[in-house]
Amino acid sequence: MKTAKIIATLLAGGLGILAILAGSTVLLGLREVDYPVIRALVAYNVIAGVLSLVTAVLIWKRPGLARGLAGLILALHAAVLGALYFFNDTAADESIGAMIFRVAAWSLILVLLLQGPSGKQAGKRIEKP
Image 1 (cartoon, one colour):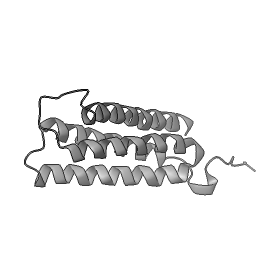
Image 2 (cartoon, rainbow, N blue to C red; image 1 turned 30 degrees about the vertical axis):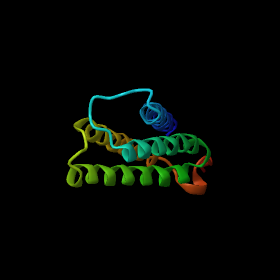
Image 3 (cartoon, rainbow, N blue to C red; image 1 turned 90 degrees about the vertical axis):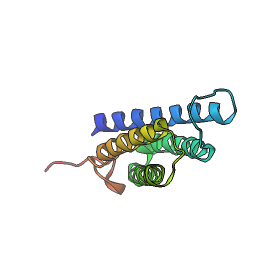
Image 4 (tube, rainbow, N blue to C red; image 1 turned 30 degrees about the horizontal axis):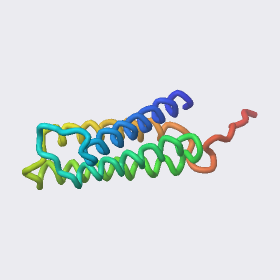
């Protein structure tokens, strides 16, 4: 379980840092991209990046809460992906591809987090008789 927690933490933290840096530079006008930008989507990605960092910390401090937050992030990303794919004609292929990557990454993170004990049992040693 410890290896799974380490991998999940690195993925969540890495995704969070990348989302915050990439999104912030676009929102602040420090970086221009050569495809249509949906500012609300970029803002969403920055907020999701912050939630990703919170989740990375909670994986070690409150594993049960981290599982719930990871599930929420996955559900939000899946909903945004659906909205981009089915309802938004202006979304760039790069935005859809990035959201597909996020859905896949958070699916993996959630699978890794679901491997161990949950809630109050997380972090407790199980004594063998």
